[in-house]
Amino acid sequence: MELIVDENADTQKEIETSELNKKIREIVSTLPQKQREVIEFKFYENLKNKEIAEKMKIKEDTVKEYYKIAKKKLKTKFIKNEIDLKEL
Image (cartoon, rainbow, N blue to C red; front, side, top):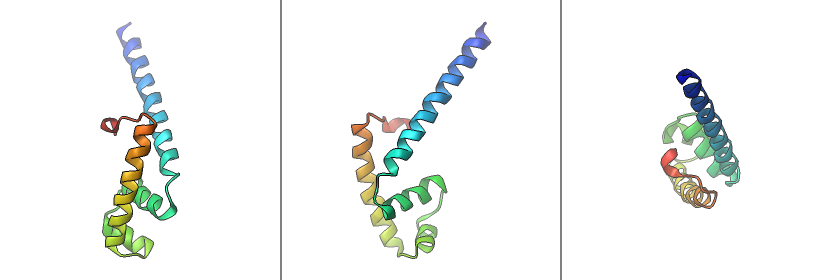
């Protein structure tokens, strides 16, 4: 019986995580293109700023600026959508 409870808890957690990831992707998709690309390269592809700069054909400082702006926008949107940043 204990295994069934654990299995259901794991399944519920997976569903919640999946829904959270979907919501985060939706929010990220609302960013302007360049900011969105930086966030996607940084978090979904785990690229470093230098690699992102090379891929996007921009300066590394520009990557940092896009990231800074995007992070600020995302924080506001996450709060508005009641996404707990500590979960991320």
